[in-house]
Amino acid sequence: MYSSLLGGIFEYITSLVLDVWLHAKFWDYSNMFLNINGRTTILFMIIWGVIGVIILKFIYPFLSNLVEKIPYKIAFPIYLIVLIFMIFNVAISYSAFVRMIYRNKGYEPRTFIGKIYDRIYDNEFMYKKFPILKEI
Image (cartoon, rainbow, N blue to C red; front, top):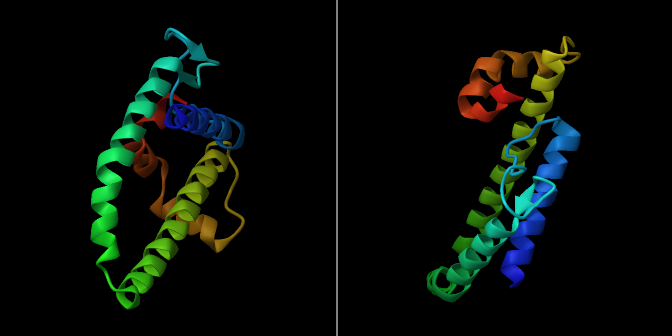
């Protein structure tokens, strides 16, 4: 039950944040039965619940046993590297979305980083990686 609620809340909040901050709608369940403001549905919340049970009952115990066998001296540096990578990944992805929004509104980049983003993460690249953006 908690997986259903957490999955539904996470999906709803993610949709809301994308809508408010990026003015982007990556999914819309308005036409589905028992939808909640088009951001999630009871059906998908049930699916989140089933996925949560599968993860907690089968996948987590298996992976936990494997991870516990990794010595701390090896695991901690790997953890730090992955954590730093993920922080950069989120920051760069978010920045690329924001720069795309401003670029599409006609704003020129104000920093050299904006110019780099316009060159590397141009609209063609963004639409290829995130096809849903074409509908926004």
